[in-house]
Structure formats: structure tokens, C-alpha cells
Length: 85
Image (tube, rainbow, N blue to C red; front, side, top):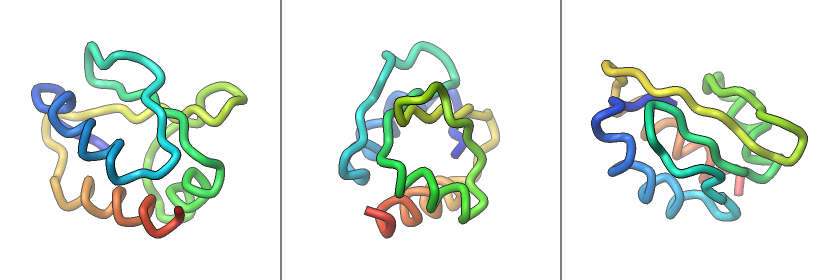
């Protein structure tokens, strides 16, 4: 999941609202989002080809943003996550 770093903060509430059980781990200050997700959601995202890193051992995921991210890729990521919950 990548977003323009200029609009990542504006997109985050949309992400959090879409994902049951999601918990924002750190305040967003740059082009990375750290979020705690249920294991089933992370497995579905991995299986769906979504690029992210598992971060630590407590269900955290790290998503890195790009300046040229396609909004369709964001929508697809959210759809995969929603369908996994």
C-alpha cells in the first residue's frame, strides 16, 4: 500500500475505518504507516501480493508510501483487508 507522503495522513482514517481490529501504532510523521492488524488480515494481504513488512512479533505491519501511488492499488489493498475480516 503506497500513498503520496503529502496525503498519507488524510488517507489513514479511511484505512483505519475500513479495517476491523486495526490499531495505528505510531503517529504518522513521514511516508510510513505502522499499524497493528489481525493475523488473518496480514495473511490475506500477503497472499494478495500487497507489499508490506511484518514488524516485530505482535501483529504490526509497516507500509511505506510513495509519491506516485496509484489510488486503485490503495482501493485493492483495502478490499483485500476488508474481505479478510
